[in-house]
Length: 260
Length: 316
Ligand SMILES: Cc1cc2nc3c(=O)[nH]c(=O)nc-3n(C[C@H](O)[C@H](O)[C@H](O)COP(=O)(O)OP(=O)(O)OC[C@H]3O[C@@H](n4cnc5c(N)ncnc54)[C@H](O)[C@@H]3O)c2cc1C
Image 1 (tube, rainbow over the protein chains, first blue to last red):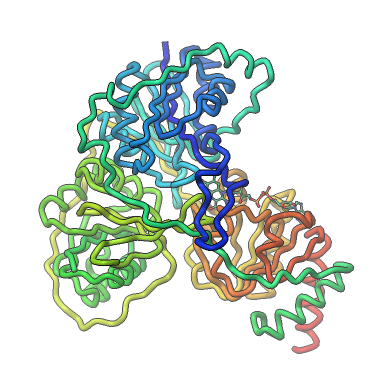
Image 2: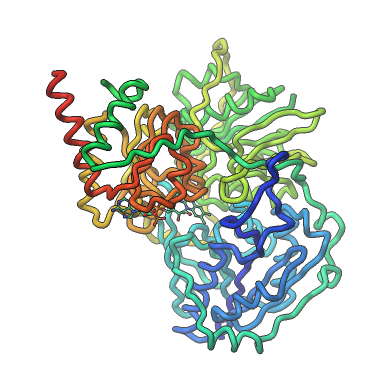
């Protein structure tokens, strides 16, 4: 039976995130929580493989203040079960700590054939989890996948780099990081949402993973964060296309950004 | 000041890395580059003590390249290791960092010393925010967002060249079955004065002709949003601007049929003037524009082309 581990991260919903007017810092503590955009893409790809070849999709997550409600979303999309670690010590986790925790968690709950995660998280966007897991678990990794096919014990993956598209093959197990374009996440039906409430969701304590202090101590520390604001003039050009075009060309020419 | 190792795929990248590192200074600088760059005269103006070279570095598998980077770090002991923020280097550095139990920061846009602590700035929360990270342990591996920085001139100096040959790919790991080169074309974007950019407001690939015609009239470069390149494949991957693509700062950025999500805007935020054409008056791009035109691009762009043509023929 094909076992797929999918790594997902609970992140603040960027579309509704607010910031503090004086410090310009994001109000992360007040943010609505959701699953990362590309994590859902990775999960969708896993569920589709399961639907065509059979097997099991196991969702893994680590963080602080992890909400079971948010993780149920992954179960509603078709994952079979979920294991997670939620510990205050992970509130400052960097990619090093996250990879150490998730590699241990994956080993602890099974021996997957395929390990899938997003190419980058929606909040930090580090692009590091897949490659770091690969080193920690000594399992090869293909990043930025736009297509994944399994054939027996072999995976074939297409990946898009800036200047080329490569197809790679590997025996399983294999780690794959999903590009945003790998799949379009489904919207779970009411039926699937109901079914998800009966699927197993298991919390594992950080201490159970037997990680040394060294492995859970972050090597980076966020000292500040502030919103990027650019003041723009917001001049709205109204009227018929021709009229607007004339006004625009006049303005741009007088500003000297186009040839008069 | 610390010793530094710079890893680059071409001379432009190396120049930019040097300029980035100059922001904090380096006590010694070494580089790892593709073999075919060794003869470039500009290498001797970068203040390098040693240059390692690898044949076809840009095609080396990430696993093999990361092993080499980790070995060089162990051998020479640099405090800071830098490479451009490209997919392959992010992967190589994340791997090498895990191997070295070291921190790695991707997409750095700034670096400085605050109270003797090394700090780096990078996009956060989709690019709508900048976060500042303090580095708690060296060595640190950084990938740097390319933004067109250039180092100030140095006098010519000799360096030691160390050829590492071609990296062997170990047995039993991944096999590359095929490679298709993608269309190139992003290299001019960083320097363009005017950029015309297309988004999913375009219904068909053929319709991009409209944008091309406008770009020609304005002597502009074409760019696009991520879905136009990555989802639809209508434009080269290298032409997409934003968080995961190019960061540009033209005098004029004209966005046609682009909604203006944070991941897109972070790449064009430093443009001097932004024009948005989007028939949804509530699209976020209108709040980020100097001139906002809430019209159908299929009606507005032909009119704009017409007006520009008439002016040109009157002037000419
Ligand atoms: C981790 C991550 C990284 C990302 N990186 C990038 C990145 O680097 N660059 C990037 O661009 N995106 C990036 N994205 C995607 C980004 O979030 C948006 O999905 C994307 O920018 C939307 O592209 P778009 O504006 O072309 O399409 P849409 O959001 O679909 O917008 C199309 C717009 O066209 C308008 N329109 C439709 N018809 C017409 C018409 N006839 N005339 C005028 N206007 C019309 C619509 O009103 C709409 O606003 C990233 C996303 C993630 C999660």
